[in-house]
Amino acid sequence: MQMDGTRRRLPIGIQTFRTIREEGCYYADKTAQILEARRGGGRARGNPRGPGW
Image (spheres, rainbow, N blue to C red):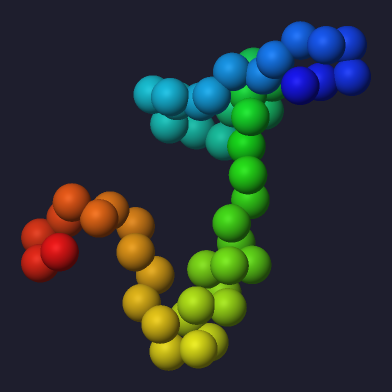
């Protein structure tokens, strides 16, 4: 919830970061977690329903 008590909506179907920011949607930056997984030799999973999963 934001400071004024309103809820941010989830950016379902929004494809650009610019639109997410302009519309005030909820956004969680996972960059650090992805980099950590890559450093540890882990495999970053983008789409769990992709081929080979």
